[in-house]
Length: 91
Image (cartoon, rainbow, N blue to C red; front, top):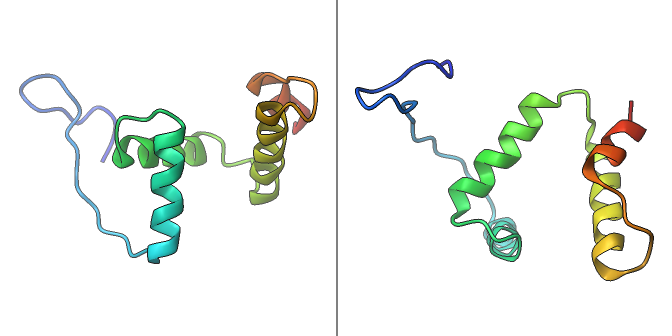
């Protein structure tokens, strides 16, 4: 389905999908989306998937590094970096 598929209202149509997750992973997801200020689990998962699709060049290791820097920034353990600076360092 492309981003140009629309309903009568001009909004992109959405399709439900089912995925299987462990309860503990789902608990981690729920804690994360709530802590990050998302309105819903679906909104958080869509953003995570969108990032993965738009930035396929970023490896799992790259995402771990980004997460580590973000954690350090939030806890005051290192200097602050913008998302753009972190992504630029991976290129």
